[in-house]
Image 1 (tube, helix red, strand yellow):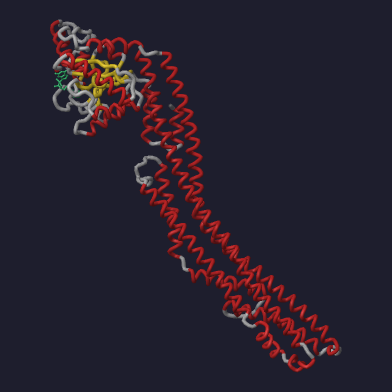
Image 2 (image 1 turned 60 degrees about the horizontal axis):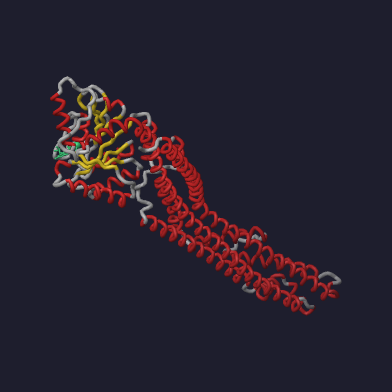
Length: 579
Ligand SMILES: Nc1nc2c(ncn2[C@@H]2O[C@H](COP(=O)(O)OP(=O)(O)O)[C@@H](O)[C@H]2O)c(=O)[nH]1
Ligand SMILES: [Mg+2]
């Protein structure tokens, strides 16, 4: 029991069950509890009074017993309240030295609270005496209550009260047959033990015989023959309680009580943990799907980035091609005057070679960034939709309802709120234009720094124009310097070849640098996007992982305990066979 309690505490078991286990340990030290249940007015109090041979409990036509009444050995005294809705009665009857008798509020009265009291008390019973009436044997509510008792694995002895009200002896036989059949089929129980009695008759007889024999006072109540009615089985029932029960049955039942409670509790909790595990798997599936979406997004973005970078490379390639033919055409002896004019050369180079390459590249970068940002927005939207749908499903299935008295429900609800909130916030704050502008600006800054452009140029395009012109200037600078070299005239074709080669190298480097830079920047941005989403999801993933581990080890412990309980029950039954 202690082990199960600990395992249950670790797995966030229901508080009520933890309390139940804690008190169960204490209850094992207590005397055998004989608990009398039945609908109100079925004669429970009268029966107990008959056992005592005295009118200790109030009897009446209305629901009279409002609280659990525990009767134990002691000098007769006024009942004493011991806790909510529980009273302690004392009576000097020898039988009570070995067991306590409990009178319960009747079931099926309009006071549902009273029935609840009795229901809650059932697990403590070592033996349940179920009082029903001959005139109305086994009502629907009785059957329901019996099912509840059965859940706790209690032994039940049936008392069919009021045989004095029978029309004929056959009626008793018919009811016996009926009850045996119904209890067997409806509750799947073994042949029930039934006693047909008249509690009232027997009480009267015993009280009468006592009065007739003064001096016996409050010693043990001796069985009294109710000779008047041979169909009143009260004497047999009394023998069962006073003798059989006190001798061997008591030990067997007393040992089976905590085992039955454990069995019931384990069964429910195993089912509970199982369904929580299903829930955890369900949540984990949603998170996995979010991760998959993120992965798909990243993969798609990387593929698209390559395509965009290829476009950039093509622009540069075209420029390189134009440059080559430009050099072929321009570096000629006939162009000496033009070549001397540095500004003219620069302008012509810009017009003929650079052309709109910077704008084209800027355009590609813009498209690429816009696409990335747009798709990121879409990713967050679909994550949100996924969470939303999941939450709706949970709510529909009642999983988020605050019914659970365990930590688990609370955590789940809270974590879901925590998971939704940043997603919702991100979506609310999503400004695709601003975000794109920021990324393009950071690309621009990086290009400025990497290509050593010293300009106050506006926009990425301007920076690129400056970068290309610098590259060209370097080349034409060399050109103008060499053009006046003394031997220059003679070696122009060779010089031209060298210049073209230098230009090509420059462009190639520019191409490489720009490509590397763009893909680094892009990768940075993508990683930032991935991190943003993972930061939201990761805590919940960790929670689910802990929860899963906790549930699985809890389940294993509880299942092991179930096997041990079954083995113990087997041992008790074998050691103390039923008579
Ligand atoms: N005729 C008859 N009346 C009974 C019998 N047992 C109890 N009663 C009456 O039924 C009423 C309810 O009995 P009581 O013991 O208070 O029922 P409880 O509500 O189950 O405790 C009382 O008026 C009793 O006198 C019985 O065997 N025969
Ligand atoms: Mg009563």
